[in-house]
Length: 450
Image (cartoon, rainbow, N blue to C red; front, side, top):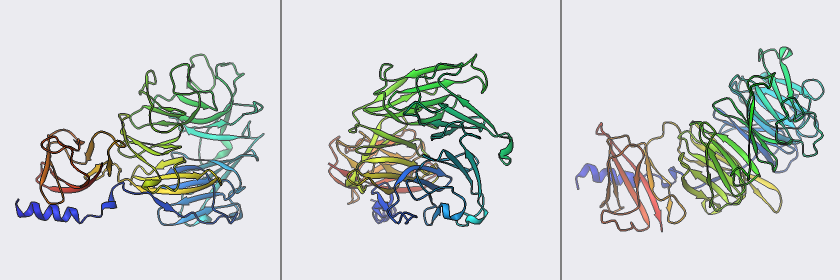
């Protein structure tokens, strides 16, 4: 073995093994007005800041090093209690609704993150702007207008959906509010009680109902229904369940629905779909996408990560550092690849914040995934991300002996965990060397657990 290669392998072995998707870390939450551990009800990303709405402690914001609390005592947020939803729009405004008081607050935090003195708050009330009082979900359409889904389990709210058309975001006085109801001229909404909303890349609104599947509304304009179409999907139409918990529009245009008993993935046109089942979980509670197109799923058995193809890459549980296997919420920083998961302790109802540095940003360097690769629990192949087409990729054991040369391919390269003789490589740590077409060398590591 040539000396430069040997030195490169030694340097690679010295890399911290926890650098890539190894272990979840618990992130302590700051004390809020309640004086207890805040219970997180919703989560949203705003650039590199993660926002949390809580049961009794207002809004929490974290930029990776500093916590900022937005509470009623600051004079901005109108109540600390029952902030059931948080949504960040394309301009960075944060919308939060309070259940029980029929109010909607909007925060424009355009100034310094830690300085609340330059914040701007806009307030909306039932009976003036809002027709209904229980906003539980929000989504922004392709025109920049914000939709609101109304929770209505008692079927006594005036509307299913509401829409704000912001003619000028800086002047709320010229905003236009529209309300849509099952009994409108459209008369085609499947039911009431909207729990989740999303807008796909064709501009259609995906409306998730409590226990009643999902409608896909292709609206022609905001005022007339003549050219509108609505398609309903549920168990009868092939979904894994009528109980849908989450909806995600991925960067490639496909729509993912997290449900009881599995995940349904619709193509970019929303005309055909596939069902991902046998995930080892009964309930998919939330979905998020990272900067490389992987989809992360919060489940009642842990966190699942999928390649964009729908192939299950790996599954995380308490054995990987999660505080609990019951995961209620998940969000990903698409720039840096940090994954945030909110777990719940069922016996007490407490929630805990978990963080994973996945490395899946849009410009990630060379690394292997899943890592560790667990026989019987991970995808069939180990993928090497960041190795450009035309690279020479080779796997070595910790003694520096060649285990496998991978055939030239397009990114990502894959290793089937077999050696040159097609025997299973034993448990242990392996070094992967990537020689790029430019001649530059890069090293990463992967662990195999059999």
